[in-house]
Length: 115
Image 1 (cartoon, rainbow, N blue to C red):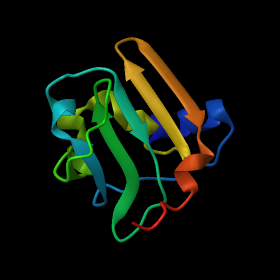
Image 2: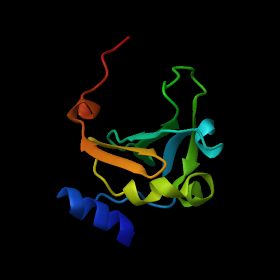
Image 3: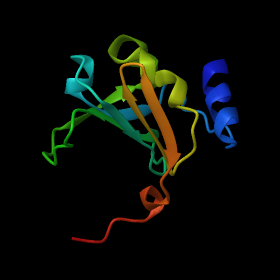
């Protein structure tokens, strides 16, 4: 969590922890090393962190694209993203090898329109 606090400090935002027993939504292609890795954080709800992590150029809209994964298992799936998990809702990251970017995206906090 020290790395997470450091990332928050670098960007001047409060630390908003993702607990080990909470879930992220993650795409299976992340585990297979696809790049770049995207991580937007929505508002957490019902035991989730609000994080959705996916890899590649295009995010699929297939209903099974994201699977739930406990934060405690992310070290096995994608250890390079763990340091970003303390960023608050409304923030996102992008990782592509050595390249890393972090920015605020307030659109993530806007409710989706009803179908």
